Length: 315
Image 1 (tube, rainbow, N blue to C red):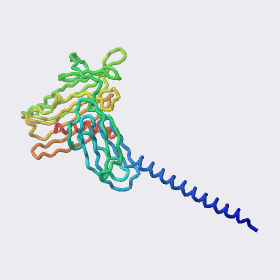
Image 2 (image 1 turned 180 degrees about the vertical axis):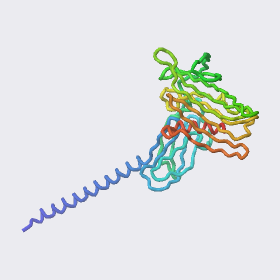
Image 3 (image 1 turned 180 degrees about the horizontal axis):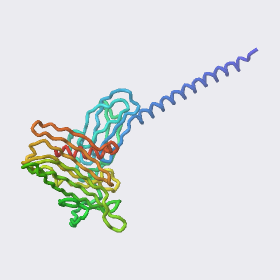
Image 4 (image 1 turned 90 degrees about the vertical axis):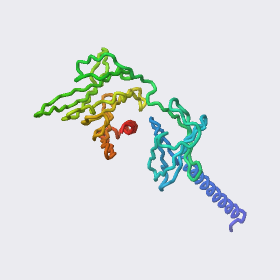
């Protein structure tokens, strides 16, 4: 015969075990949900102040507002956009944002800013990042007075120098005209050269890379030339190795108003590697075709953004 006392104890023990299991399951689900909500968003700030956002557990299209603000200057920037599933969304700051109110953030000094992601006015993510406006914090570009370069072709236009982690760098811009007489016409072929030298262990300059471009068969060729003031030294990827860039044009023109179709190119040299972007301009129709000829820009997205911005300012 079963003892009733023991039977009741068994029932109570089973009930208590079920209760503990239920509580454990509830706590597990609650903890998982809390962790899920806290780890829902990823934000990465690129070296060129590009804000990259991912909702990596989302499976739908979401409307969000991205707000960047400064407690110090009381300034607010915002961007209304959509983000799809777990795709990365990239927006450059501050150009890709609308300035809402306050004092605009200075472009000459670093600032600690807060980024907030909002959905239907609810803040779902917030963090602080450092905005660094300068693309060149440490490197200094100077004129190079010695223009006697035996290995440089044509007439030297100018030369510049800087020192970085790789040593002393010197770049030279030059051009060369070749005249061809065809019947009674004299046609000009103009060649543009861009040289990048670097010093060796004996402090002697050695050629790191030579870039050549040309436009041929022009009756006059005053359009094919470097834009003198476009020379610029940057350190976009913050590796203390300089990137040097310049703009030049290719085309035939007998006037100074760029009234004929022509090509504008931005050339960047870094550690002997060439990065380029070009735009073909037809002034009368106002059509512009932007192309990216160097495939290596796909591996350097921040270089591409910089070159694109520099090119668009020229077109």
